Length: 246
Image (cartoon, rainbow, N blue to C red):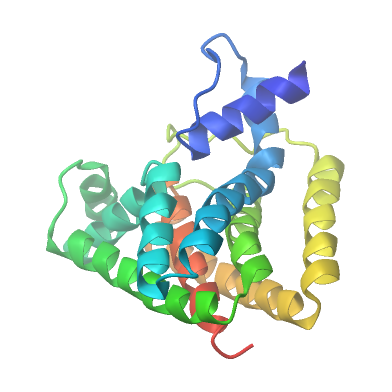
C-alpha cells in the first residue's frame, strides 16, 4: 500500500492526472514519492508520443505544436511556472539572495518570466519538428524521464535555500540504496534501448545538472521548488536541441 501511496503522490504533484484523495498520506509517503519521479516522466512522454505519431503523418508543425501544448497541460505548467519565477528572480534580484527569493515567491509574472517561457516553448517546438520528421520516437519518450531523473539527483544532493520550502524535507532520511537502485534501473534501460544516443543524453544531463547546481548554490545558496521546475524545463529543451546532432 505504501508503494501505491507514494506513486499517487508523485503522479498528483507532477501531473494533472486525477488521483484519489491523498490528504491523509504521511511524510514517509511524500519522501518515497521521489523514487517515482522518473517513472512519472515515462507517463508524460507516452502521453505526448501517441497523438504525435498520429498527427505527424499529416503535419509536422501541428504535431510539434500539439506536443508542446500537451506537455504544458499534462504537467499543469508546473515546471514552466518555476522557470518563469526563476527568470524574474535572477533579473530582478540581481545577485541579491534575499531579494531574488522574495521575487520568486511573488505570483505575478514580469517581462523576463514571459520571455523565458516563450523562448523555451519556441525552442521545443522548433526542435520537435526535426525530431518528428526523423521519427525519433524513443528519444522523445525518454526525455521527460531523463529530466526527472536528474531532478531527483538535484533534490537529494543539494540543500534548500528556504528552510521551510515545499521540498525542504523531501529528501531527508531517504533510502540511498533504494534511490540508487531506482535511478540505476532507469539509466540502464535508457542505455540499453537508445545505445550511444542515450548515453550522450545522460552525459549531457549530468553536465547540465552540475552546472545548474553550482549556479544555484552561488546565487541562492541552494535550490527551491521553482529551481527544480526550471531545471526540468531547461534540460528537456537542451536534450531536444541535442537530438539534432546525435
